[in-house]
Amino acid sequence: MVPLVGESSSITRLAWRLDILQYYLQEQIILRMVSDYNLALNITEAVLDKNTHEPEYFDL
Image (cartoon, rainbow, N blue to C red; front, side, top):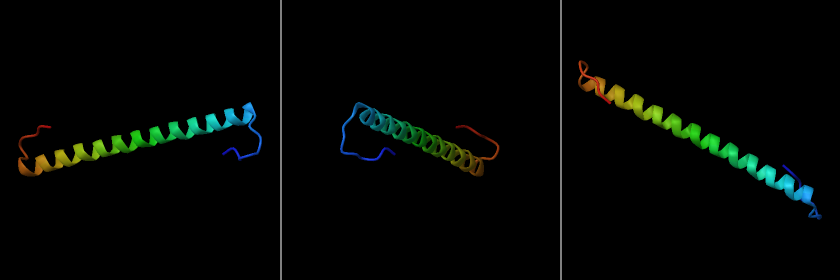
């Protein structure tokens, strides 16, 4: 993280923008991973639930 300093140089502002962009992109990747994981859990639950009620028939 870029430390806060009293000057407002263009290098400091650029560093802050890059830092914010990096954290934003990391957050989006983490949210996507969590979303994919939840989808996988929902599909697994649906498959297991369907197979316990009608083992001879399977349909998502």
